[in-house]
Structures are given as structure tokens and as C-alpha cells.
Length: 354
Image (tube, rainbow, N blue to C red; front, top):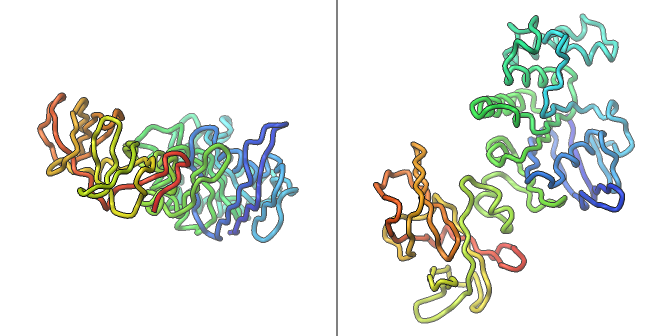
């Protein structure tokens, strides 16, 4: 296992800079997830940690050793890719054993490690099979077994579940997390799927346009996003937003939207006259006893929950309820927006207003 430090790391391709001065400390044994939209720089950052991309500037330290110029084989890291990258003509056993054999290890030395990894990953009965005889989840477990047998100080996962169907993704999320808990290894995991990030990470690093937007524990980021980007990226369905001007009068402080809708605000959170964007998560909206007008346009029953879609302030909002309200499209209702669950952001800068 190893701690990892990134200090001022950046990456340029010619005149184009794609990673901008990233600072990140990853503790020994921590599971850190880099998350963000496609093209945000998360995979490039991981490839720099692995040694597959040159570092244009800054310092990378792995286990206390500066690793900028170390070749990949000297960094003691194992990487699991989006594609399984298995040799189709080799059995599961031989695929897992490929690395030790290339390093000219003796079979009696690495065979027990392969058997232990296969047992851990439920592959013991598949060791004689070729990859074409395996399911997608089993192939990904073989790729993980190959990484485990190397006994690295650092595991790197680059969107390893994106080629799997929804049911397998849920299963493999659990298996990867369980593997981490058994090995207590340091893990850096890249994904664009915020559900994966929320369910697996000790800490999440939210990236956008080559920069870190926010770092924190999953629920801390969900409950208190630092800016509009993080607020909109984390959560499914996404947080609802409405932009307006803050007004104070005898009725209290409120956000007045362009269509005249008035939403009460907590006192002291925003100055009168300021341009503010309000956010609230769909599950925090009350469908009874409120005063914010809402016309239901689309209803999505999912079984456990029902999503109601309509517009507030010219923007489409989603309301999530666990009840089965018996509402029809076109029906008008009023919503309650609890003050404790409102998030306020400066519209111009996007930063959170505390």
C-alpha cells in the first residue's frame, strides 16, 4: 500500500493545457474516486499516475518516492482498464499468470497467489476456461485478479464497469468495494457515473475542465455542494435550480423569479438585490401544504418512487415522492420548499452562499 501526493500537476499537449495544477493527497489505504463529465481530465490524470502519460509539470509522489520520471514497471501500480484486455487464446489461469511469468517468477511462488485471488473473486471453477466462455462480469474479475496477483502498492481503475449492463454494474460495484475492504489497498478509481462515485468512494474528487471543483466524502458533497457544477453533477435525478433576484419586505426575504413566483429564503443567506440561483433536490420537495405553483407535465413511476416533471420559473423541475399520488398530467398543485434543504449560489460565480 502507498500514499499518493499530487502537487501542482498539469498536462499540456502542445499549446493546449488539459490538466491545470491539480493538488491532491490520497492516504494509504484510501479509496478515492475521480468523477466528472467526459473530457474533464480524470483519465489523463490517472494515466500520469500510472506512468502512461508524461507529466508536464508538478510533482507526483507514490509511497514517499518522487515518481515523475519512473517508468510504469517501477511504480508498483496495477491498472484495470475499461476494456478487459485479456488474451483470448489463454485460459483464465494463464491470463492471471501472464505478469508473473513475464517477470520470470517461479510458478511455485506465484501459483498460491493466483489460487487465493481466484477464490477471493469467485473464479476458482473457471481457471481452465478461455475468456470467450465467460460473462462480462467474469472477464472483469479476471482483469482484477491479474492486478491483485501483482500485489501492487496502488490499484488504478479506469472506468472498469462502463461495458457492463446495469445489473452487472451493481454487482461489480459491490465486489470491487469488498475487494478493497479485504486488501485495504490504496485505490484510485475513475468514472463519469456519479452513482458509482457515491456508492464506492471514501472520498470523491469532482473534476471539470481539467480542474478539481471539490473534494470530500460522498454525503458531504451531496449535502453541501460547493458550487453549481458539483450541485448539478451529483444526484440522480439532478438538483432543481431557479434563478431570480432577492427581495426583502414585510413578508420576509424571498427569491423572486422572472415569472413572478416568490420562494421564501432563510434570513441572512443572501443580500437584497443580489442575483441568486436556488437549488433543491427532488426528494426534499413537499407535495402538500406549500405555496409554490407547479403544473405537472410528465409522470415517471419507477416502482419505489414517482418522479413528477413540470416548470418553475421557466425551468423544468423534478419532484420525487415515495407516495403514489394519483396525479394526472396537466394537474396543478403547490409545492413546499423547506428552508433547511435550500441551497443558494451566486449566479455569476457559481459559488455556494453559506
